[in-house]
Length: 190
Image (cartoon, rainbow, N blue to C red; front, side, top):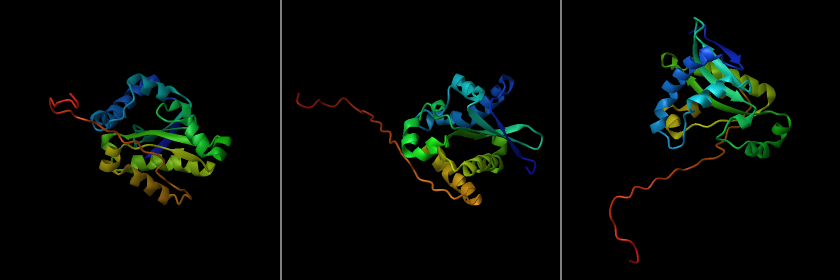
């Protein structure tokens, strides 16, 4: 894919959103049964994000110009319902004062292009912006994706390649529990 290129779009037209939604479902749909926390946007949420000009869409195109991947990035943290903008503002006050706090929402690549070039190109495009702005950025990766696909390592490799002066740290985690009651046990005290 020597002619792979990335464009930055503020809004995806309705006639193209469905194609991206199909890619999204293929990439993220399996997470419905692989992760406890909801990892998949509902259809209307996905469409809203694709239309929202506050969310930048980094679109990877193959040598024919066909879109084969998309990564979302925003400095409008209120557009990401599962995070706390206040956390980032308190943690990075200097960045907040410069409006230089971002969140990377999701990255997806079509199955035919999953050998890394599109993922790499989109992340590289984003890193260039973040370096230029001396920004702070957050992102999340569910345990399944990190274990199965080593996404954290892939992102770190792009950062290292860019020779970005950057500190990466795990900021937070949440542990989910489940209990399975297996029988008709006697109740205590009674």
